[in-house]
Structure formats: C-alpha cells, structure tokens
Image 1: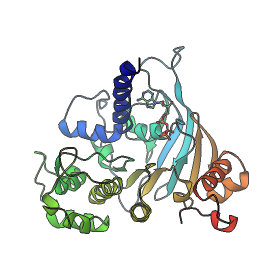
Image 2: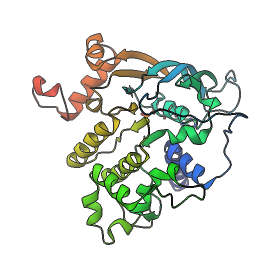
Image 3: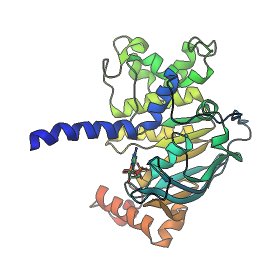
Image 4: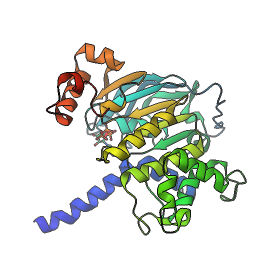
Length: 328
Ligand code: ATP
C-alpha cells in the first residue's frame, strides 16, 4: 500500500508547492501571456500610484472560498469569513496566526489571482476588479517564501524585476541597464556572492543551473523587487531555517525595502514583525486580534500565546529578560 501512496503523496505535495507559490507562478503565466481565469473587466482602468502619495489598501468584509461554485454550496469551505482591515499608505501591516488561517490567501486576493466571493479589496479607493491586472501587478512587489528562479542567468533572474519597464517586445528596455542590475544586487547584499560564481552575472541558476541556498534565492527576490521599485510590497517570510547569518541579512534588507512603502507581511517568526504598525492575528479565516505588538501582548490572547510558544521553542534556557526579544 505504501508503494502506491508514496508517489501519490509526492504528486500532491508538488501540487501544493505550485499552488502555494501561486503569485509567483501567476507572474510567470503573465509573462508568457497565457490565458488566465480572471479577466479584465471591459473598461478596466490602469492603477496609477503617485510615489509621493503612496497607496492605501482596504479589505472590506472579504469572504472567500477556493471552490468555483456559489458560496452557499454545502461542501464549500469558506477560507476567509468577513475580513476587514486597512494597510495605510507607507505603513507596515503584519498578518500572523496559526497555519491554514488564510494569510497567504489574503495576499493572493490582493494580487487578484482569485476574486473575492463577497466584499471588496480597494487600492486608493478603487476596487481591484476595476483595474487592469497588468497595472495592478506592476505596482506590487512580492518577496515570496520560496523564490522561483528561472533557468536562466542570475542577471536575467534579477532583471525580471524590471520587466514592467521593458518595451512592448518584452526585452531590451533602455531603462534596464547592467548597472541597475548590479546596484540592485548590491543593495540586496547579493553582489559579492554573485561575483564568486563561475560566470558571475552570467552564471545559470535554477533547476538546471547552479543551486542557490534559500537565503540567496530570497536575496535575488529582494534585488528583483528593488529593481521593480513598487509602492506596494508583499513579504512572505520564509519558514525554512535559513542560517542565522543569512537570516539577519535578509531581514535587514527586507526592513530597508519596506521603508516608505505600503507593506503587508506574512510573518511566521513573530520576532521579525514586532515593529509593524499594526499586527492582525488571523485564525480560521477571521481576524481575532489587531493592534501593536505591545497592545497584543497586553491583551493576553492568541498573539500573546503564540509569542510565548515561540520564545519557549527558540530559546528554552535563556532568562526572561533576554527571551523578550528572540532572534534579535
Ligand atoms: P500557512 O501559515 O501554513 O502558510 P496560511 O494562513 O497562509 O497558512 P492559506 O494558505 O491561506 O493559510 O490557507 C487557508 C486555507 O485554504 C487552508 O485550509 C488551505 O488548506 C486552503 N487552501 C489554500 N490554498 C488552496 C487552494 N489552492 N485550493 C483549495 N484550498 C486551499
């Protein structure tokens, strides 16, 4: 029986991996111009965000399930059950909570990989369903949990971040110089590592090329996003155990990247989001708590419990005074 289940499990785990990287996959599909499930509404407008003004994001009583049928179907599992929150311009908002609570689903809806079943998501007052998808995605930078690298040079993997600036034919936008790619790699603390590769920026990476570590892939994603320079950021923090050195670099870069941008962070390690302006605690599709780190600790609810568990899990033997800020 095991012999039968093992390959099935592998396929299902592969499927889940692809789905969980859905936003990245969606960008790829966009790139290849394949037919999409969600289409632009006739008369859809382009999202234009004045960088000096920034972007306000608003989720209003959002309900969502993954099935295609109407929400009232008996066996339809509602994944988001009336989500309301704001990400004010230039602020950082974190989503935390137990696995399966709906955090990633929220980011997929913001990207409009799926449409809400009811309620609305608005950016600067305009419903995302009234926007062209191309313009919406051009304004959002994503640093995913697991970065997908194309089988191409590390240069192209970074340059892809500037794809929204390229010309109609897809490549060779005048704006996207090698100098800009290098600047982005430097700012993401990846340049020195790339210079140590056999063919430096021309080194092939991805499945068929050189394998990069989780932290290196994330730094490529950060470089990509720097090049894209979007007013809205989605950070899906890695759960995988990056080594401490890499983790510190990645965290520091992510913090710099989010300065002055409207940022939505999915956090698995609470220590990385204690400075967020607002932390929303999501449980089974509902925001059960919302506030600053200090406010939520004071509340003594779900967040305080998660915080306690992380401290116990990560630093079992340090004194309480030190344990208050695990991971630095
Ligand atoms: P984690 O912290 O483990 O990443 P999460 O809070 O991000 O979890 P989601 O990935 O948004 O949670 O998942 C919310 C619910 O939706 C879960 O029950 C999950 O099984 C389900 N789900 C996620 N993706 C899909 C999909 N593509 N099709 C059907 N159900 C899905």
